[in-house]
Amino acid sequence: MYSNVMNKFKWGNFKHAKYLDQQSTSMFYPQAVTTFDHLTLGLIKDGHNDLALNALHKFDQVLPDINPGLMATNSKISIADTSYKLNDLTLGNKLMNSVDNYIIDQLNYNYYQFQNDTANMDERSVQIGLSFLSEMSGIAHDHNQLAMNAKLSAQLADYENKFGTILRR
Image (cartoon, rainbow, N blue to C red):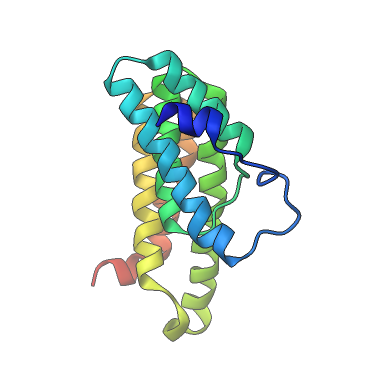
């Protein structure tokens, strides 16, 4: 799998494309992120940390920094954790910030809906967003990324307070 992902597959201009269609963002991108996630975890499990780090750098090199949905976002959190495990703190923090921006945007939108028209609020997205913030905060704490942990913990507490009435149901 490593050779196929790293050498045989032609990524083309995916990272810098001006337009990505529905299939690219909703089907191909999440699958590509998941592929890199599974590849790096498998390489670490087999004791090939150097190859896993190469795969992480390839991921960053060939895929755009987008968050088209929860599946890709969840895999990006895992890749950030793997980056921290392999001491690539820069990539780990980059991915955590990217996912954080996406989650906060979704939570802000749902909080606006919560204040103005509760029927249009997506309670599932709120719960998943808060779950992701909690997971990311724990990952940052576990890898001694104190500033990231503090930021994520503060955001989590803020949104748990904002959505407190629906979370207690």
